[in-house]
Amino acid sequence: MTPDDSNDSAPTGAPVITVSALNQAVARLLERTFPLTWISGEVSNFTKAASGHWYFTLKDTGAQVRAVMFRGRAQYADFIPREGDKVEVRALVTLYGARGDYQINVEGIRRAGVGSLFEAFQRLKEKLDAAGLFHADRKRALPMFPRTVGIVTSPQAAALRDVLTALKRRAPHVQVVLYPTPVQGQLAGEKIAAAIDTASLRADCDVLIVCRGGGSIEDLWSFNDEEVAYAVANCRMPVISGVGHETDFTICDFAADLRAATPTAAAELAVTPRADWIGSLKADVIDIRRAMRRAVNDAEQTLDGYTRRLLNPSAQIEQQRHKLRALATAMTHANRAPLSQARHQLDRLSGRLGARRPEVTAARSVLTSLQHRAAISIQTRVSQQRDALTALASQLELLNPQRTLERGYAIVTDDKGVVMRAPSQLKPGSTVTVRLAEGSAQIDIDKVQTSQ
Picture 1 (cartoon, helix red, strand yellow):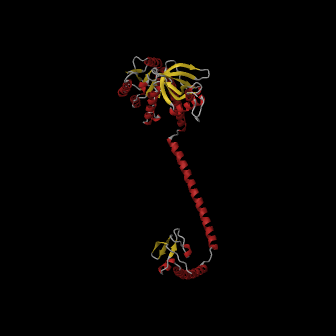
Picture 2 (cartoon, rainbow, N blue to C red):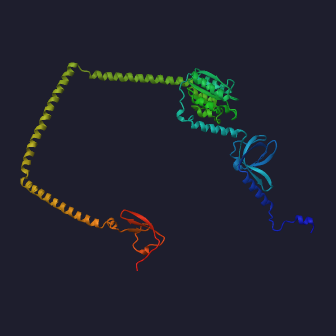
Picture 3 (cartoon, rainbow, N blue to C red):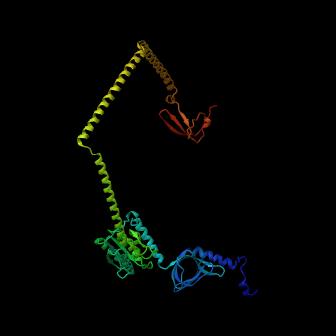
């Protein structure tokens, strides 16, 4: 055997594994070592297979890794990534055993940067909710017929034109006050809050609209500012939030008294259309006329009734005099009849009572005698019972164990309280309790002697 042959041979007894087993072991090692982790990178070579699985490469400037997102997870993604998209994936590091390729199995995907913004949004929302800014009992109702509407937005924003157009179409009589402010960019949140505070301090309007057009979460981020939320909540007039599109939600929406899906919707909610005003006024005029006509008719009918019932004062007095005489006569008869009847009944009952009244003199003598005899009997019985009780108490005192202990005797019990009556119950080395007349003592048994 040559030296080369000896180097190629496996050591005696060493295990030999297959490539599949090796790849499976490496995959398990990777999965245990790297739990689910968020990884950021750029999408490359994206492919959506007929099975619904997504295959792509995640890379940065220095490295890349293959990635797969199976259909069961991909169907819950809110967007389909494209070539060059910056994303963040929550993935499990593993190994594709069939080819031995290192890859990541993606469980979730989001656009880069959105995750941290969304988490900040959730934290601020929970904080302000706990502080009570979003409670329903803080929400105020909008005025039915506002005369002045305030708008907090950028003068260059398309949202302003939409709001003004809607207000002019629905209620051209309503005055508009603009509180200009940047709605995007650095320090925009502070400036939006300052504009809201200015509107609240000046109190020029009946309702305030805070609005801007749609955009990404970054574009709308100024309305997720804590100062904006407190400014909206502390505003003296009701606030309508019309930020973004229908699917966009900001902290400003939750703090406002009412959220509108769009700036145009905010304008429609803020004012009642002029036609509705006029229609409401016409309906009120009709209702008032009907009510007045009904009230006049009712008054005329009542007056007619009083006219028919009205009598000459002298005739009315004479009528009341006749009525009074009739009542006096009826009252006299009503009093005499019951009194006479009651008198006859009393005489009859008195006669029956006299006939049935028993003779009680003899019975009273017998009762007196029985009472005297009963008193003597009770007194004798009590005296006998007292003597018997005294005798029993004396006997009980003789049987009292305490008296036996006072004569010099003792009671011996073990640690469980069992009374020891024979030496055979005592064991050397055990402890017993000896109860005496004036206390007890614990004694260790050293030696036991029995009587012969």
